[in-house]
Image (cartoon, rainbow, N blue to C red):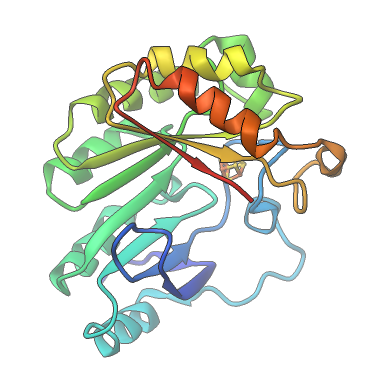
Length: 239
Ligand code: SF4
């Protein structure tokens, strides 16, 4: 059995895997430090972390609810930091679940291994900024050249897969101009799905970002419309 441990579980979600009822598992820790991160509690090392959820516990839950749940989504933090992740997905697949991962794209080797093995039905990758090192580093807080190379490799990998692959950007006015988002869409040209997520200032890793006013719904729609020149399906997710 995989030795994966999870930081939390949402037992039922209707929005994390479109068209399916999913359980969402969260991993702790991230190699990025995005100031706008909405999952700060998973990124910052807590003084007294709650007890981790063991695989045994997760599998018991998934077996019990297999008649009701369709899918397992693993989100973070950054799940691919855990070497035991592929084994955990083997176990979800053995129970007959559809699977999805949310990732920042810094581990294309693990993604490829999991895709080649048929362990992933759906990959959602964050693209944080236009693909220029300085802009990307500024947006994610901390970035090595190796991580940047890996992000670009993951994009190339996901462009070619047959499973559902979605790119996403949280649009933060103090970090992204409208042209920046269109620039990302141009880079992703030919991809099937690009989702623009309206920034949510209610919880942020950097408290200063709590004062940033999100783009309005109309502005988000305008940006989305400009991106449609490059990508088949542009979705916007508003607060
Ligand atoms: S937004 Fe995602 S990639 Fe950025 S710090 Fe939070 S969990 Fe990590």
